[in-house]
Structure formats: structure tokens, C-alpha cells
Image 1 (cartoon, rainbow, N blue to C red):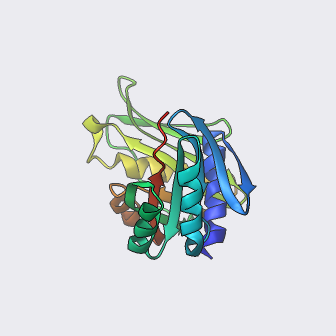
Image 2 (tube, helix red, strand yellow):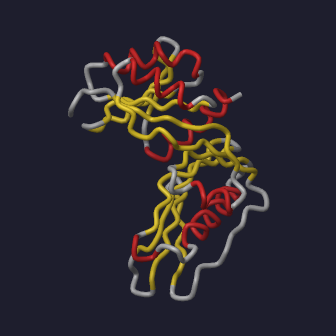
Length: 212
């Protein structure tokens, strides 16, 4: 079940980032092609994570590994034993039916801008045109994957993250999406839970020791 959802999430992520992916020896590999992250391997079955971690550790280029799991402590131990460096041990894989998603209006002094190119982008701007908050959402079939939900430090604690998510979801539903998927940092979980998103699993992210 998690594996299927991970595959669906990954299709939205690569659409949002303009990336490509492939199955290599039965494993899902995303071509990130950045100096510090050439490839990202995404586990669809944490029972095989020890072998996958060994593959990532032996890669000649900077490579990362993301492992959705119900047993994060065991996964951390396995990937560290393989020689990987755990970067984020406590992120969360989440989902939500998009129908009825909260869509609050922006506070006074802010305006919302929505564009499609074709990925949905929401920008919350101040009266002076400064960027206060933003986010992306890629629609693939009936799935919508949220990505890069950010609020500028000077504009935090004003509900702008909820405004961004609400505007993204509203646009995604217009484009035919029914289910939302996302990978959340530890700081983002509270926001998403307040909007009705639910945990699918934990998420452990690590990288090998090859420098760019």
C-alpha cells in the first residue's frame, strides 16, 4: 500500500521539479542532476532497505535515499550500518482527500497570485509586491502533490501557509485532482495536520559520503 502511494507521490514530485526517473534493478531512481544530489533513490519497500542503502552508499556520485517506513529507528540503524549519513530522520509522508479542504482568505495587506505553467504555483504577495509565502502543486491524474511550501521569516505566524495550501488545493481540484500527497518536514507537520492531512508513514532521508 505504501509503495503504491510512494510511486504516485514521486510522479507529482518529478512533475513539479521538471525531473525524470527510471526503474533500475527494480529500484526507483530520480535523476536530480544537481552537484550535491545527482540521484535520489526512493524506497517502495522498507523490507529491502539494507540492500538499497548499500547500493546508494557505493554510488560514485552524490546520491540520496528516501525511505517511507513504519519503523524509522530500524531503518536509521540499517542505513547507517551501510555507511550512509542520515540527514532527516523524522519527516512524514501525508495525504488528504481534497474535497472540503480549508481555503482561508489572506490576511489584510496580502494578495494571492495563482499561475499554471503547467504546475500550479501560488504566491502570496504584500501590498508592495514582496513575496511573503509560496508553494507548488503538480496534478498527475487524480493526485495532487504539494511541494516547496514556504513562508518568508518576516511573515510567519500569520496563517499564510494555510492560505497557500488552500489556494493550491482549490486550483488542483479545478484540474481534476481528488487526493493530496506530500512529504513534510518536522516543522510543516503541524500546519498540515491543522488542515486535515493525515500521516501515512514516517520518512527517513539520508545521503552517501561522496562530495560534489
